[in-house]
Amino acid sequence: MAPSDRFPAEVQVAVDDVHVRYRTASDDATLRRGLPRWQRAANRLVGREPTVLVRALAGVSLVARAGEAVGVVGLNGSGKSTLLRVIAGLETPHRGRVRARSAPVLLGVNAALLPELSGSQNVRLGCLAMGMTPDEAEAAYPQVVEVAGIGPSIHRPMKTYSSGMAARLKFAIAAASDPQILLIDEALATGDAAFRERSEERMNHLRRQAGCVFLVSHAAKTIEETCTRAIWLHRGHVVTDGPAYDVAQAYRWWAWNLAKGQTETAASLLEDAFRQGTDTRVVLAPEDAGSAVPRHARLRSGGSV
Image (tube, rainbow, N blue to C red; front, side, top):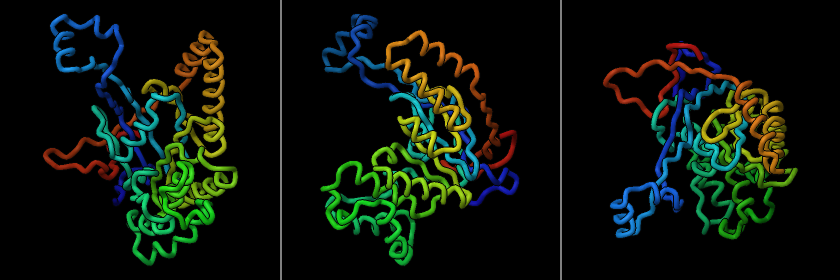
């Protein structure tokens, strides 16, 4: 996807006030008591649970530039994976827009791997699915095998792999295509120290090629060691966005207090982090009236980023 001549060339991804919400079933008794009697009776009749509105993302804005490795931290349910899916174009926001310089590659989704085939067969298949020619896939094979680091298991069917081995192979395939925008969800937590070193080297290579990487992880230490910048999400909101070391340290200290039951201290730390966090504002050009805009339209100027 060709970049606009007028838009800053270093901008790879722009997320503009994105909201994602959905309804899901809940067995919370207080929800039942809050419903009218007729609705409770109707729900019992059809075996339907009451629903609750979940706000997965609530007004998230960010800009990712070439050469950045952006870590995303937060508790389960904070919106980390939802954010990656929205950037990848796999989930449509209820409100807001996302623009990407090129089609993002979400690790584990883009590689079409088949459990009945061997790892080596899946490497070639995955590379073809990533848009490589047969010759390019064959040339990339040794590097993929080296980065994955699963040894002789590469010749066994993937259905015999552990989840960690499969994640490592998927990462190696996704990174082999030199995507301009790579989105990684927890994959680096599945390997040993040697794999983490190889994967970090590969991520650094992508950044040197003027790309950008998003990495979701529960482990603040992984973000601190791997990324140049980090975003802390909490219940769909951006708490803070800044240097990876600073954000990881703040998140780790807050999470430790929360885990130890120090709820008042944790609440105070969270409030301070919100107050000190960066307020990112993104202004995207309005769409051309009457034109069909692809999910990842090229970036255009029209305001400040």
